[in-house]
Length: 566
Image (cartoon, rainbow, N blue to C red; front, side):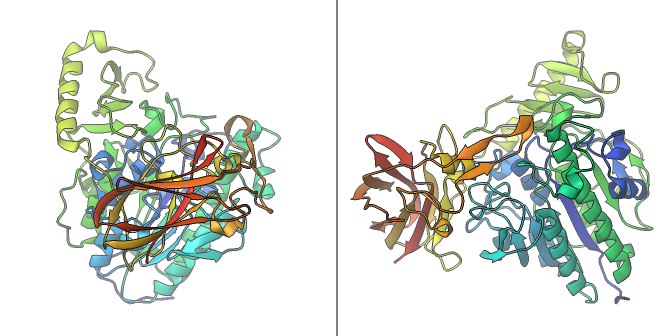
């Protein structure tokens, strides 16, 4: 299908979840089958020193904004610290403002409520799962990677097939519907695979199950399924006649969660060592980008300024932390930039200085502010040479101190807003509790009735009466507070180390309570009721909400709470 000449290229960004640098055959892995990733590798500019955050949501925040994740309020995957500050401009905002059609299909993980949902952040076409993964707490109850219910522009929609197949099929529909228009498109395909639970069709699992441990077999099978989908996507671009006018980027969000082969690197997902944050990144644009290795030090937050430059669109009024990589991608500049990159893995309520940090230069890696590695001589980071180079340590520590003073820590909370027309009622989940020792972030913990609690940081748009409804189970489960779901009483996660199985446990609370804006209320919990409702007056502005069920003195946080303006 021929298309009208476009002013700017289309952009497709594919981001896999937990796939490390070594989880691609072309990077030396002799076990995994990734022929389409390998071909894309060969056809692209290959960023071999490309770094992201060591975990999911922080990488996505930096990728979407071109800024350090800590600056944007995102340094964790739960606890309300995966909500991208509402003042940030996203990649989708930039493309939409430049006349692009925008779509996301897969994993968002930067907020499930207004004003943080992808539809609030520049995406016009949206099909996503909830939270940070399929079968996590904000996801539709009972999803298991097959024939699931996802959220289409905020509304639940049943789908057929395996999750990764669904994301690519929906992306292909989006691409086809825009291929013949003068308006270019930005298509974001962030898969939840190969993140656990490691569920995959048998036809893929059978390729590996007899040769490697089961957890590795499942992990690699999920990646091979992604590979097949990537191949079909590229073939479809060719059939539509738009391959040459489309920028295609493939990358991952952090180091491997199953480092069976780790390309000689130390560490894995979550680690400040190289294996935690150095990931594959291939940038393809026929006849415009050189198919060669680019060894310059680069980071995820470079991609937005790079795409603005490559696509020739207007640069937003944003102070990027990243820089355009266009000169390196087009082969015009092979000189390594004199730059320093900072990586950290916080995963706490408030950022802590030096916590799981890495300071990166073209040659050096300073880990946690103390250990120094010469990455050129020692790519496996086996020998700490800090004592031999105290001047380098001192210089990199000074760089970090300046960065810390500049970047953060982010002050306050990214607040979920209630009392608006954009989302009413607002469906809150314990995934976003603040100040909790344990966050029930997956549906297995919900089944087991984990006794934990925290509070939601809210912003009230309009004062007045609000109805606050407390549930132990999500509404779609149909289960009463003191009962169990009828169709889902066990979840097998099949994750690292053989996985774990969660079994449903009941509670029998007699009291439900809320604390909002300093006002505490309690109500009895009738037998076999699904929800307990409170009506309270709330002033506008910031407020904290906590909700619970009490069972013989033991308090269980209300995992699911609905807030609506009366």
